[in-house]
Image 1 (cartoon, rainbow, N blue to C red):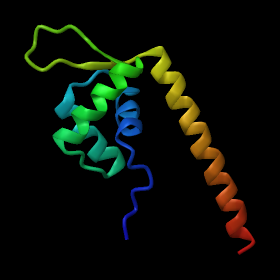
Image 2 (image 1 turned 180 degrees about the vertical axis):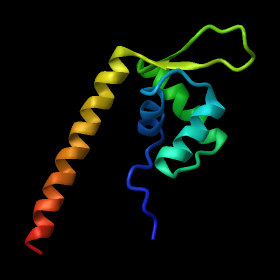
Image 3 (image 1 turned 90 degrees about the vertical axis):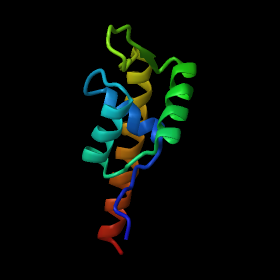
Image 4 (image 1 turned 45 degrees about the vertical axis):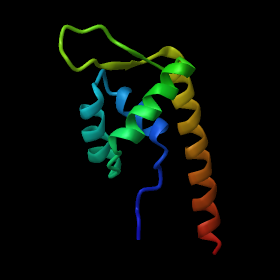
Length: 100
């Protein structure tokens, strides 16, 4: 049985960046650690592109070869809304399970 409830790459990337700036490989490793989901490079960078287009993350200038990303204020607001919705769904489900 797969215990990974949250597998949306965009949500996982935002959650990773909520902990601080990271480049792609560091995000993949972090997501694997906290979420138990290993994103492939194509999935990761496709989601990063969509998140940048939405203005939820941005690339940070760096002298290093790997360019880190940072969550924006709009990204934080979106992530907070998504987590509130997930919390609401979880609480409803737990209440229903008590009566099952």
